[in-house]
Amino acid sequence: MWEISKDCIGGTERYVIDLAESLKRERIDVEVLMLSGTSKTISGVKYIPINTSRIRIKVNEYIIKNTFFPKFTRKNLINFAKFIENYFDVRKYDLIHLNSLLFYYLFAHKNRVFTLHENPFEFDHNWGRGSLSKIRKIIISEKDKKHNFIVPSQNHGEEFNKLFSIRTKTIPHCLKKDRLNCFVRKSEILKKYRLDQKLTFLIPSRLDIIQKGQDIAAKALGLAKKKIPEFQVVFSGLDDQYIENSKIIKKICDRYSIACYFIKFVDIKEAYEIADVVIIPSQSESFGYSALESLAIGKKTVLSNIPTFLDFAKLTPFAFVADLNPECFANKIVDAVKSKKVPQPEAWLKKYNPKVWADKYIKFYEEILRK
Image (cartoon, rainbow, N blue to C red; front, side):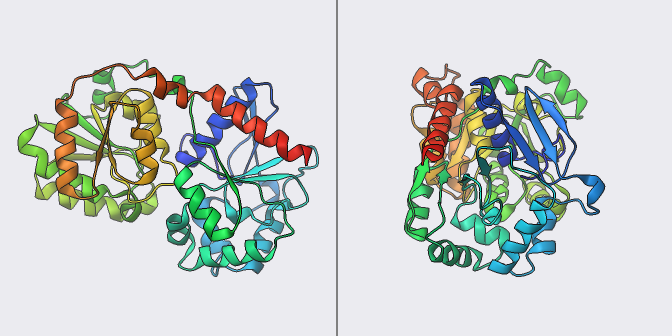
């Protein structure tokens, strides 16, 4: 697992926290192993990093590719697993739940579950063209291994089933929305980050334009500008590696005379609190945690019409689904701004209930342990 801290927490990390805490509430002992970070216990869950006294480099998802995968090969996957195994003693665990196929050879002697967070598009995008094909050949060639794969989206489950000739288990993600409760007023947060007191759009995804489509959102806001009140747009997810992308987005916003801001929030709940409308124009998502968070707390959310988001859009009036182009997004942005606030339907809340979610995982774990 990557580092989990206030400075290092994306969708995958939030998923791990929510799952670990949900399992803990059901009296399952959970420990989260991290490749870097500091030891801590939160809500009864222990977070344990590699022993930093024995390692000189900080291992996180951004340096793994250059350090361990100059080429995506079976040998490098094995070497990566051996490196990590030197720093963790997992003998006490009944089951290991891993969050990436990069860990395919890690702790292979234990009962293991993989959550496939990276969909086929993302895998090649993140780890190099052809990497998915290579991991596919490895998995198919080693049919003697026990493969327990969970996918958060039925659509991507079907894709992986065909690609790898395996059977996956679909368990949609969930969250305990209480952790997004913000007890600071919107006006105070806006003042804290030197933002104006006016209509505010939030685009919460990391600034990976190719996958997340912030350029489409900026153009759409430009097209919608004359049809909605004066506004500002806030982009979060500004990691150091995306500084150049922020310049590209800024140029688009300047072209339309849009007030735009790129902010690293102290806590994501602050970002959602100031948002009147959330925009998520992703071209690909394995699940889309930001979309789940936004809808769970009742924010009007404009989403691209990718299969994963179409699942979210069912049963809720807060989702405004658009074709992935600026013109369609502009129309849906206008619709969202003009729409009235209504309660989230009980059917939607029940579907993404954290206890139901935890029960599904526990049942799946128990089935594996009985084999």
